Image (cartoon, rainbow, N blue to C red; front, side, top):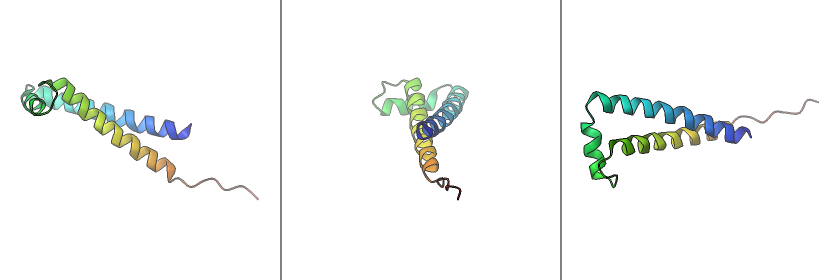
Length: 80
């Protein structure tokens, strides 16, 4: 399944990157901003849930982008 493989690779790549970058940024500022943002959303003030939600959103965007790109590849032509 090349389509599923394209989606999964795009999803995992962006998901892991956003997870790492948001966790590092959150750790550096002492979880202050993420806790405040998480209190505005229905996350119970959990900065970890906010980081996972951010990574999930990025992963879905990356997966759909990779899926679209794999669909635009030209089909192989038969050799005559």
